Figure 1 (cartoon, helix red, strand yellow):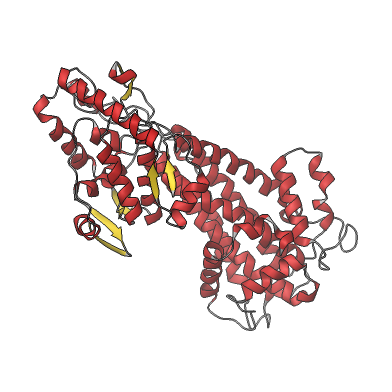
Figure 2: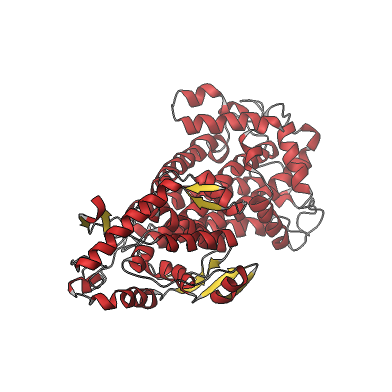
Length: 504
């Protein structure tokens, strides 16, 4: 059970909630804050004070006062009008993450919602009822309005959800679980949708997959080094210590562990004096990606525990401030940075693939073909990798440098962070496919060299890979191999093995 406090949620806990479906609850202390904040809102309504989003309209309508009798209708209309997302739905795990993150933010006690609202969010998580949320339509300020509105619809008994592998009417799934719809009162609709939980949820899933992929890239490139008789000296500890980047040092260390006792690596001058950069500079390039991952992790964990709605309620309602915590710029920049960093793993991987298949760059059979000329071997797999890398370059154009005014210029600068997070996720998916292709080519190369000469660590990986992707004895439909290798990396290649390769 993951206990939410509004202040201490970590990525590792999110990983457990998303992939292991661990249940969530709220701490007693957080409920006290929620109740105090709600009392403040009710007092504001009772006194008919002019407070944005509670007794006024929204956005450009902030100067329109709302009759106290219409407070609930105001919140209902808000959700209905703002649920205008389009496109394919977010992955179901992103919807699950959105529920958790929205609940955690409200539990901080600055948003003024009733306890029952947060309880419904937690019930949805624990019953695995995940709202169908379209991916497109958010500017990333004032928060993720459209996506979060779709997240809220099922709480009201409307919209659609994913439930037990099916997409169905929300009310039908709720009835099966004995969960009843709620009605929203003052402030609650605004508190639920005015935040960054769509971009942050997408960012969490993207980060978790990217972290795993970064470890896998080191394992796969180690096999490539063996397939190309790479020079081990480039990974010497002293080389990396004198530069000083901890992440670079750690990558080199893991590479040495992967390649320990290998008879397929060489020393300087045995075959050649230097390797190409795509082999020699793996610690420098992959290490820089790890620097980015560390930066992104820090920003995500801050945002996961942030109060991002507006207005925020302080001092028991004596101070209610309209600020800008809904602005997604910190996550927008982090997601753009993450996309660029992961795209580089694909860039350098594709260059290693080229070195594995190009007969002018190695002494292996041309394109790793069983019968060069009659059979094309891995020739077009390299084309596919090159196409994915090129697509990543367009996706890596930063979304955060763009802005467009909205709400009659009241909201005149926005983050586009949700677009950035979606693009980063697509880059991760494309990069996984590139690394899948490298894994196929690398395994083929080392089998040609002789698997008895591999290091124990890389041989362990090869054995697991060969259970899924057989040796290329003749041309076949390689799309199936790539898909199988991709699934292997996504679902069957554990991070724990990558962190401690010496334990193989």
